Image (tube, rainbow, N blue to C red; front, side, top):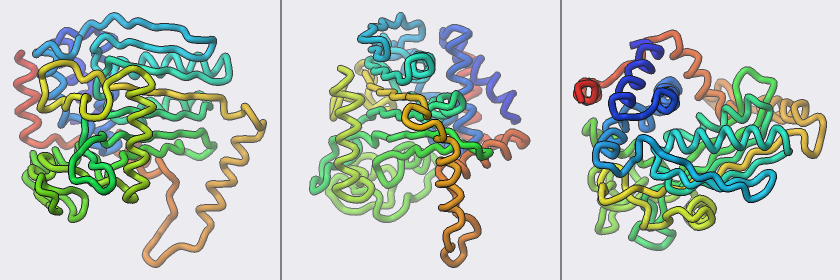
Amino acid sequence: MYYKDLSKLIYRIFKKHNLSSKDSKICSDAITQSELVEATSHGLSRLKMYCERINKKVINPKPKFKIKKISQSIYHIDADKSIGFVAAQKATDIAIKTASSKGFGIIGVKNSGHYGAASYYINQAVKKNLIALCFTNAPSAIAPYGSKKKMFGTNPISFGAPTKFKYPFIFDSSMSIINRGKIRLAAKQKKNIPYGVALDKSGKITTNPKKALEGVQLPIAEFRGSGLAWMVDILSGIFTGAAHGKSVRDPFDDFSGPQNVGHLFIFFKSNLFTNNFSKRMNESIINVKKLPKTKGTREIFYPGQQKYMKYNKNLKKKIKIPNKIKIEIEKLLVK
């Protein structure tokens, strides 16, 4: 299925689940982009979950946002149990407008949900010649360094900067060695996960994705990754008034109430301190790309380059949909 047809299909599903036309398009665009950049753990594999949460009234399909203006450049959004895509897009729109006119924009969000891949929002800011930072927390999955019990989410950090190159510079990474969505996808496809990324509930290393989901994920860079996951929980959870730590509900397994995920968006003009940011940024990329390569390395890529190379390639190809997900989609269409 080509991406335009897929986007229309996802749009129809969200419309059937009582989202407005505008909000359905936001959700379909974000999910389709995840498929185009081959971030499938944040794409169609989550569609059934979003719809189940709407059906069980723990996602509000017609939220009424409460937006509080703290200052000329700072806003706080209560997303009213919105699906994460819609809340994050509202924050992105405000942050872009504010940063473009005032120099910077800081938007805190509470009472939201999982918003897909952060690069979707970061890329919108970069296209407007803005530097962007985005944080979001997630259900507990990572064990703090030295513990065998989970506390923090995979809590991704996302950063983007404009360049004159063909592809944007976007770094988007969870604080776990692999993101939780990939473990869920492996469980769905009955495949093993890499060795050394997760522990089972007894604290032993496991390659079984189901045991990993019952146990804990390991942070990147040992205590450093654990500290970064905690930092993101502070910024997007504690700071914004959202849930944090173990109080963030798992969207797949806990339907007892809304997730109350928090997000923090910080966008600012790239020329705040220097008028030649673009030139200096390009010099940085060129200098890195000219470095001597290790054996077997064809090219040194900058963050975001490979992701958006896939995006351009997949725009012209049919997107493969696993049979299990096809069945889920068919059921969602006959709601």
